[in-house]
Structure formats: structure tokens, C-alpha cells
Image (cartoon, rainbow over all chains, first blue to last red; front, top):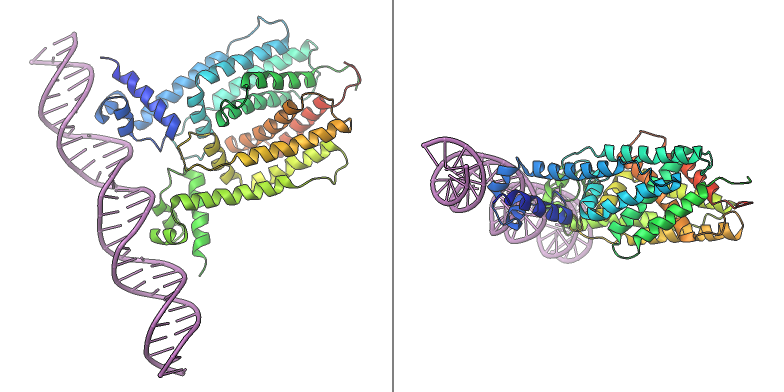
Length: 194
Length: 194
DNA sequence: TAATACTTATTTACCGGTAGGTAAACTTTT
DNA sequence: AAAAGTTTACCTACCGGTAAATAAGTATTA
């Protein structure tokens, strides 16, 4: 009964993530959902409305994960790792949508209705920065260019996620993320000499 | 006289990079080039043909840059830096097309005709790996997880490029790249203790 | 040199198909 | 019967692609 709205959303996710926004027609979506086009317009104002509601929902889920504190671990670097792995876990859950979001965010400006993803970057970056500050305070990391350190960590995370999107199943990406973070953290660790 | 083919290609680049492949119609391209649609089909077999020729041309330019040896600098880490900055310089020249390529590569599989960009990643990664091997041989870097080190460098580079695409003009990205590489190289440098 | 024949380049006019979107009728639930 | 949900049938606009006519350049011949 009240199933159709969910079915439409699922069908839209499936098709948008497979063929992109412009490459997917509302007819296809309706058909895949086992209903008809006007019904889609009944529940969502437009193709754009359906699309934006999917993006917003996904963004919110991520912001929630990132906003947690991860203070159970004692070491700051372990807290940082927990943060990254939690976001990564969510990423794996929502891989297809994230692929879509990624390509829209970095893609041609008018290739899809515009949506502001900036908060994801800002919030994630802030969370990483906070843990880095803590790590430096606690003497785990050397006191260097904190912005650059945060950038390295975020980029490395992003790199693993992108690899997984581009070459799914080719590596054990969870292990890769672990190795890469270990390498970074070791590099950032306080030196005894020069 | 023989100007039209070039004009078509330029118009196509402008529109594809602004609106994506699916979002751009051949009519628009022809119009912007100051000619007509069948003329486009005269020079290029299809919309897809025009598109692929643009991508291939760009990929080739990058492969050429990456394949250089950068052996003028004495330090391995400086050679590595030169490699990154050379690729970055090319990136800035071709920013719009790279944005398009990026979003296709990481985007939904059927959002545009398929094109194999993998060689870019492989070749760039190999070039970085080679310099890392050299840096370790020469005692500049500690002897650690080389794959992870290469991954960090490539991801950092990628991160700067993506930032520049997403937030153009917001930072001095050349300086950011320098800072980030310095931070990584310092982290990878051989320690006297611990 | 001027008319010819041939090739290349470009246009007009059109094709079938599908895009996003909607009016209005019909069916089901309350 | 009123409200909510769903469908049929349709709209206009545009899509990628092409046939056929035409224009422009070039080589050949008289």
C-alpha cells in the first residue's frame, strides 16, 4: 500500500547510481518501481525533487557519523583511526550513492541539479583537525603543519574510497586504509632526533 | 576554412565540461561552433566519437608528462616533487577537461560512453613508486611500507587537484601542494631513533 | 582560358523516438 | 461522499542521427 514511495526511491537510487542523473528517465524509474510516471510526480514534485531527497538523506547519515566523538580509545591516533573507520564503514554501506555524489560534487557544474555537499568536507575536516590537535597535545604527533597533516589524512581516506569505487574488489581496501593510516601516523609521530 | 573541426572540438570541450556528456546536445555543440549538426557528423562519426577523441587527446598529454624521468634534481624527494609539480601544472592547464574525466572515471558506470583511464593511474603510481624506491636506496626515506607511501603521495596530489576543482580560487593550491608534500616527506624521512 | 567533371564541405529539412511534465478520469480507502 | 492514490492518454520540446540537395574547391580537358 504505502510501499510505492519507497519503491520509487529505491528504483531511483538504483538507476541514478548506475546511469547518472541525466542518463536516467522518470519513465524508467516509475517502471522499475512497478508504477507509473504521474505517481512519481504525486509523491515527489519532480525528478529533481526525488533526486535531492535522496542526496539529502545520505548526507545527513554521514554528518551524524562524523559528529560522534570517538573518545573511548585512549590514544588520539586511535581515536582518529576509529573516526576514519566509522566513516569508511558507512561509505561501504552507501557506496553506490557515494559514487554518485562524488561524481556530481567534482563533476561539471550543470550536469545535475546543484546540491551543497560542502558541509561534509568541512565537518569531516574539522573532526580530523580536532584529533590531530589532541595528538599533538598528548605528544603522540610532532608539532608540525597541522592543516597539511589533516589534509594528508583526509586525502588518504578519500583515496581509498575512490580506489574502491574505481576498482571494486581489486584489493582489501579496509586493510589498505589501515596500512595507509599507519604509515601516516608513523610519519607524524614525534621523533627523538631531527 | 579548415577551422570548423577545431571549433567543433572547442565547443564540445566547453559544453561537456560545463554540462557533462548527457547534458550536452549535439545541436548545442554545432550551434556554439557556428555550424550545423550534420557538419559535426561529417567530421566526427558521432557524438560519442567526438567525446572520445577529446578524452584520448587529454590522456595522451598526461601520459607524456608522467613518463619523463625528472633526474636533474639530486635528491630523490626533489625529483618526486618535480614529478608532482609537472603533472600539477598540466592539470591546471586542462582543469576543465580533467574535472570531466574525473567525474566520469569515478561516476556511475553508464553515465557516459566508457573509456579506459586506468593507464593514467597505473603510470602515475609507477612513477611515484620508482622515486620512492630511489629515496629509500639513497637513505632519504625510511624503509617502510612503500606501497602505502606511494598511495599517500598520490592521494595527497589527488586531494589538492580535487580541492581546486571543488573550491577554485579558495586557496593557493600550488602552495598547499608544496606544504602537503613537505609534510609527507618529512614524515617519511629516515629517523635517527625510534 | 574556360568549361567540365569530380571531390569535399556544408546546409535544409526531416526521421522515429523519447524527454519531463500534466489534465482528467478512474479506483481505492476513510 | 470526500479524500487519497493511481492510471490512461496526452502535451510540447527536444534528442541523436541522416538523406538529399547544394555550395565550394580542384583537377582535367578542349
